[in-house]
Amino acid sequence: MTILDAYAVLALLKDEPSAEAVGRLVRAGGRLTAVGVSEVLDHLVRIAGADEEEALLDLAELGLLGPEAVDADLGARAGILRARHYHRTNRAVSLADCVAAEAARRVDLPVATSDPHLLDLCQEEGIGVLPLPDSSGSTWSPT
Image 1 (tube, rainbow, N blue to C red):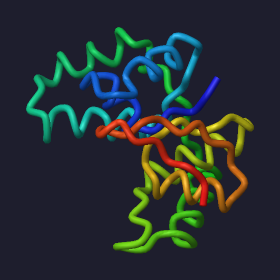
Image 2 (cartoon, rainbow, N blue to C red; image 1 turned 60 degrees about the vertical axis):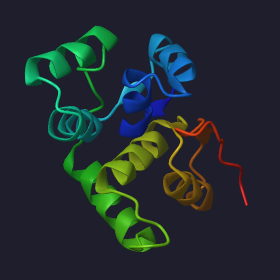
Image 3 (tube, helix red, strand yellow; image 1 turned 30 degrees about the vertical axis):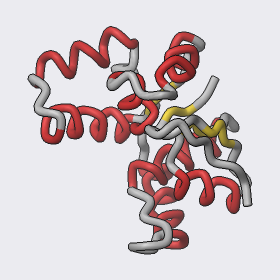
Image 4 (tube, one colour; image 1 turned 135 degrees about the horizontal axis):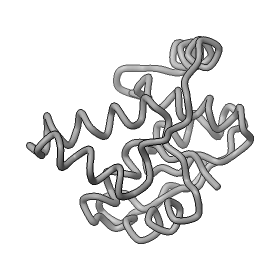
């Protein structure tokens, strides 16, 4: 199993190059955090213009509406992680990215993403990763 970041789920829903791999991860029990659910829904409705009910239905059909809970400890650890690593131009990781990273660390699972900033952060923190192809089909490799 893996922890999926929101970008991975959006890539699946948009049928991007990593869609097939993400689909396999979802079917194998890949999990999204509660903050990841929020981020996916925000993107689908606000940016992609999806109907709210259709966006919810898309996530429900994937089985991603029973997400990893975010408690105070996980939230605090994610906030500290972001404070340590965030840089506006060099490492623009979102708080949702950091929640996914800390959730993965907590349950000792890799984070599945194509976000190079999140992948770099996880590598530095010793959090397992499963790099996915980005929207252009390129896959991150460790530096």
